[in-house]
Image 1 (tube, one colour):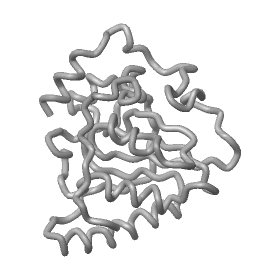
Image 2 (image 1 turned 120 degrees about the vertical axis):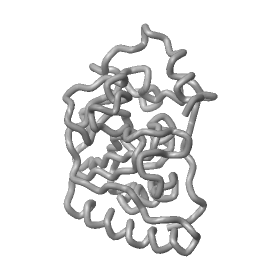
Image 3 (image 1 turned 90 degrees about the vertical axis):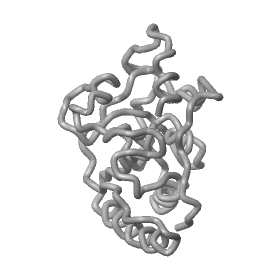
Image 4 (image 1 turned 45 degrees about the vertical axis):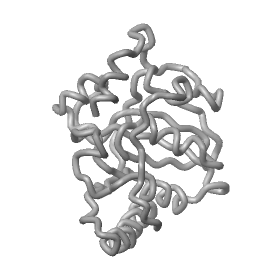
Length: 203
């Protein structure tokens, strides 16, 4: 947690602007779209969103990734607001993807295997409710699949000695884009902090 906080304190204040028509650093397309017809989306929380976004931007079939805040009650929160623990928001990644090239099954497999979903309000050394594990869906079928994979993965985790999964699975609330300096952070800072890491258990 302390290495993450130190790194975020060093960030250039001049890059703290909000997302408008800005483009994805790697995809060279507007973060807010428009997206091709048939594009689907899902929102995921797996701890610090810097590493989570990198995990998904590397998947074939992903149209767009963006980091932001969701799951709480405060409109248009800033990073500082979220860190105060008063907003209820989670650090999340919004993934737009082409379902003809990438299935939600594959996305959920990467989600479950990419972090430790048994840690409650933390992920590794990053502690706080904004680092909780969460799946936030836009489609009923995705919601059902997320719960089915949760039950399956929990069985496998228990066999490996892990505790109960604490991941929240909910219909998606409004997504608030994080500040520009957070977007594709690890593409701009390849040696930056990345707290993502799985349990070694496969789905």
